Length: 279
Image 1 (cartoon, rainbow, N blue to C red):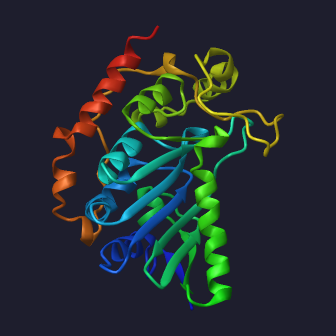
Image 2 (cartoon, helix red, strand yellow):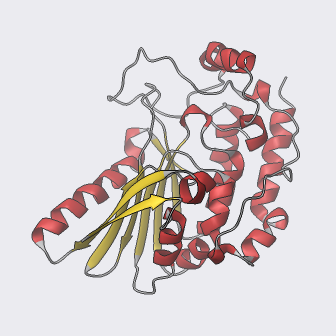
């Protein structure tokens, strides 16, 4: 059984995720996404936080091409702690990490969405996106084989032994920011041509250290599109966030209302203050 999710008309990916996170029979939520922004996390953080308190969470996130923000990663980590796991995947060979997979497993069945929607407001609700939702009966040998293949891929993308995946914590967040892997959302909006050229020219030679390994896959001659390291950081107020229309599930979310006062907001402020001191 399958379902096509074509947004923004009709079904939306964000609604699908919130509905499944509320399912009391769901035991595990796994995902792999290329880009994460606060605008997307805030749409599911309430249900994700409640699910993480009772179920297993494992999410692989990419940091290529400036697509994932400090605020997005910080909010996502706060939503799944202390039990859930967020893994940052990056290959120094410049192969872009670009999947969008969301998996929900019950005892005898599972639902998997594979499509084009990132964990951003556009990817979940407002962009024109296409995804297919697949249902697997795990007591069926053919269904289980396909499901295990997808599950195994996400486990591979969250395997620290290869050096391309690191489990996210406060210390790694600081290192990602200082070495230019992630930017604040205000900095991401500064997309002038001169800054883009400087990013490509200076990123590798100015980085303090490579945090990830160069995996065997990927073209080593591809020129990186990532941001330069922390010399571009400025002291930008983190409260200047664009508001988007919340989904019905996100209305009145206590987590969203308390975000500025939460520990993850203080971590954002710490990262910005630390980066601003670098010449």
